[in-house]
Structure formats: C-alpha cells, structure tokens
Image 1 (cartoon, rainbow, N blue to C red):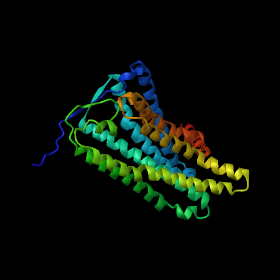
Image 2: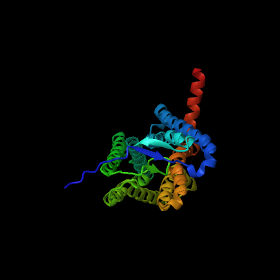
Image 3: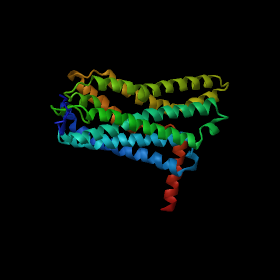
Image 4: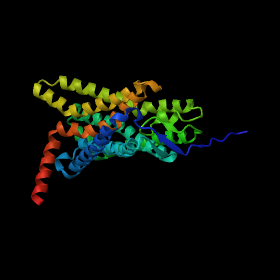
Length: 312
C-alpha cells in the first residue's frame, strides 16, 4: 500500500532573536538603516550605470546584476525580520516560507555565478587586453547573465520541489529569523537523506565551481601582473581588481563561516548572527566597496549630481 506524503503543517512560527531580546531596540534601529542603505546604494549603482556613457562596459554591466541579487536578498529577508523582531516572534504560512526560501536561494546562487563572471571579465581584460573587446562583446555578456539567472532559478526550483515532496507533520517552530534551508528541513518528519545528497550535488556547480574558477582566474591575473615591468602598471592591475576581490572575500567568507558553525542548539545564536551578516550586512557593503574604491563610479555620481542641481 503506497503512502502518500501529505504536509499537515500550514503555518511556520519563526522565533527570531528571542535569545537576544536585550538587543531588540538596537535591531529595530539598525535593520531599517541597513535596508535603506542597501536599497539606495544598489539602486544608485544601477541608475549610474544605466545613465552614464563612461560606465557602459561589461564590468559595470555585471555590477548591476550583482546589485539586483543584493536587492532581492535584502527585500526578501529584512521586512519580515523586522516584523518578527518587533513582535518577539512571528508566523508565516508554509507556502510563504517556501517562497521566501526560493527567492533567497535564487539570489544567493546568482551572486555566486555573477562574481565568477566578473572574475572572468577581469581575466580577459588583463590577460587578453588586445582581444578583450571582441571576446567580451554584448552578446556574450548578456548570454552569461541569462545563463546565470536561469541556472539559479532552476537549481533553486529543484530543491523547492524536493522540499514540497517531504512530509511536515509537526513541530512547526523555527528558531531563526527567516526560512533558511537547514532549519526548514529539521521540521520534516520524512527521510531527508536523498535530499541532502541532492543539495550536496547541486553545491558543486552553484558554489564550489564558481569559487574555484575565481581562484584560477586570479592566479592568472596575478601572474600577468607580476610580468609587468613597471610598478605603476602592477598597481593599476591590482587596484582594478581590489573591489571585486574584497566583495568575493566577504561573500564566500560569510558562506564558509555559516557552514562551519555546528547546527546543534548550542550554536543557534552564532548561526543566526552569521546569517544576519550574510543576508543583511553583505548586500549593504557591496555598493559601498565599489563606490568608495572606484574612481569611475565616484566621478559618475558627481556628474549626475551636478546635472540634477543644474536642472533644479
């Protein structure tokens, strides 16, 4: 007799930061500030690239895609998190929980791919400067971005469909501030070994392969830089890549930190803090890193501000 899996849990209770209630006011002040800074910073970059002719290069085109990923992560997580913190816990429908996880997963997967593409772009520009424009043409860069988003959507959909097939018969309490994959799977009363294997397999093309490709590209870039005879030339190469390297270090560093923290109850608070850095702080500092360390972005911002003042 076949047993049909049936989800009986219709509502998820998210506890948020009940173990850090003495920081409630700080969270309620800081998170809206982070949200505003993230939205304004990333929209500013998208607007500057779209409206400034000097920024119509592949590097800045990929930067706008990174900003879109950051916006998707932040707007998916922070508004509901604020509600949960304010009420010292909150509820979400089971379908809403799955939708939140799906969009969050898509955004994070796309960021892995886009950071890898940006490293590839820097590799072509530095190691093949004479052929760069012909190789990194508009068709290739649009194709790379479309493939990245499609792979992210498809991989996240595979996991989502597998989660839907599980049986959730209770409990329905998640000690987290959003519907992340691990705490969500802990609620299932089905055997999740097959799904865990599926997730590990998908981690190879989504996370491990992009990271390895970034390392390989930057090894070649470093070798090319060391062959440059002048100190000015070498410093120019490293300054060109410094912003991207900083973002890569922060992004993959926080991912590694989260997965290195044990999942048992003893480390729940540490895991939530690490997740907060990963989902809230990182999307906020990405546009800051690129704007503070990039002369083209700063000059474009100044010119557009001057234009706005003239028109007013």
